[in-house]
Length: 293
Length: 293
Image: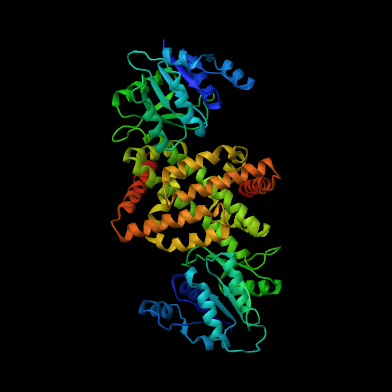
């Protein structure tokens, strides 16, 4: 029987765990200092509480699924509490977080000389739900590891291995590029609606009508992606900074600016909600215009 | 008979002139120190060469249609050569360039106390062609001026006045917001394709396939907007800087980064064309995937 640890039991982690337990996999997690809500989520997903020591000595796989800013510190702490063993094949640590390839390389370096093999992964899509499964893209420095992780498909996960010249860092680069396009365009829309509105409400309204006339597909996307972004913006602040680090100097400024934009939306949500309301109103009116024939 | 001056006889200026001369308007321009190609374009559009002195004393309208970096210096120079007159209604200077509202306010200040009234305009769309006409959005501090400029529709132009609380700066803000969305998203796509490819060609290929599976509308847009951007990128460097100024601190970094991105594409086009080729190949393959059923 395959045993897999998933840290932590967040929305994504517990969703993935549910798929695995439904497919007969034993799933461990660590619930030290976790909230009641997290413990309930873990229980509902069939996850069992275990210490890092137990996880390291019994699991075939450890999936790190955390907020990006916790990825490195968790890996470090987990390794400190790992027990040495000579199991074969070696257990695999899978770094699944939305961190930039440079951070992944730093985390991979921690595992060199440890009992763990290391796979870089990037999850594209939201948590599993009903028939829907996000894709785990994986890259590694040894091809045999990729074959092993693709084997997890038998337990209900959707895995895609990056082959060719792809090494550690490639899966994270893919995740960064994809989020840079999807969450990046949403950020541009947001920035421009707010800037137009700041000029005058009439400017924002004219922008909507001009987009409707000349770029209806873009307006449709704007009306769809903005409302669900508003409550999640706080989570994207760190992800945009990771992407800025991935892109590097020069164009990296684009994502430093997008990180500031999402921080602004986070402040609005916690504060006077003025920006949030301008955005929600724009999206609602755009939808109405688009639905009018 | 209405007399309109258009400075300069570029692709947009001569295209607009052609519409006007076809509709019985006398169109002047100034061809001092202009190239043979520009002179030919002006002639084909039915534009007549005239000094700034003649233009200021005979024209009802002066449309400034220039690269953004020339907008202020042209306005200054034109005013220095204007002859004073007491014509009524006063001739109108229409600032049509893709400059940020702060620059428009500086240009508007030059005209205070001159013989000219001042209208802020932003042209959205490409040069007129066959039945196609771009839209001139206009804003002004006096509503009567807006009624006058809307009157130019009788001569074949497409004019839309921003009313309500919109003042000088609003039309430029609209132009900035629109370009910030259209040219901004193209810049994000470009940045991410190059970053993914730099990680490894396999990463860029996986990005394309994932977008095809989960974001086909975005991939379709990418395949369509990237090839025509490559040879025009050099013109967008300054426009992105104007938008950065419009947005201001914080999120303005997004557009400072996009200006650097387009400068990179300009360097690639003039240099080894490596980035240009990566982008063209991605767009071509994306198109092929999208067309395969």
